[in-house]
Length: 292
Image 1 (cartoon, rainbow, N blue to C red):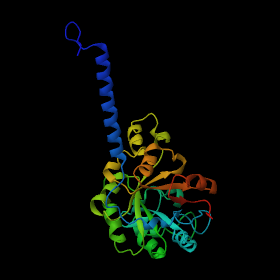
Image 2: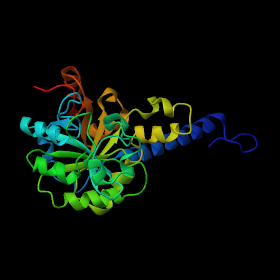
Image 3: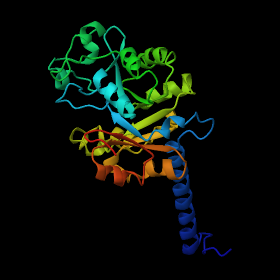
Image 4: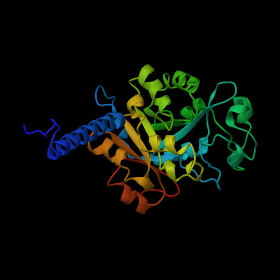
């Protein structure tokens, strides 16, 4: 090996050394990235629930009708059409799983405050979107479906308190129909990974960096992490449910194409969106139209 006059490496050797170090760093980063986004690969549960491809978002609803979102009437309509159902679960103040989408009650009921500020009995008297329907408990919703169609149950949680998982699971253990769970909160999925490995679990995600409240703020970092599924190493989901407008997200595509994870599209709102999503997703959560 040739050395300089004082034993220094020649310029060509320095360049090779730098290139090797950069390559090692790039390869290590790629391996860590793939490890982070990897879905569950072994001991996967039964995927037969997804023989049903179409899931009615919050039931087959119309908020200007007598069957508003997440109502028993909307669930009955979905069952009647043979569609699977996606629904949302919160905990009431007294720890009862109830079916409602927003954290705040205002949009659908006109009331102030959050779901968790009211008891289940209080919520049972609250009318949805001016209809005759009220906020059902999870048990009431399940009694409507009775296992006739599969369910995607979104657990609504914005913190590390997993009491909602325990209480929801207590009810679902007694349910005879097919269901899976999903959540934007990866710690919900971690709870299921640790406690109920046989339950199919899905990571919800979206283009969070496009939200106005996340731009130019300390929330941009977490938004990037969640948007790109970088906490999947905690939850090891069986499927990823992604906003169908952003189906090109690299992490989402790798989970499906490279690792064989299932992919759910939300929310598909037209036949044209359904046609476009059909190339890149396996399951479709829809509203605002009736798929043929």
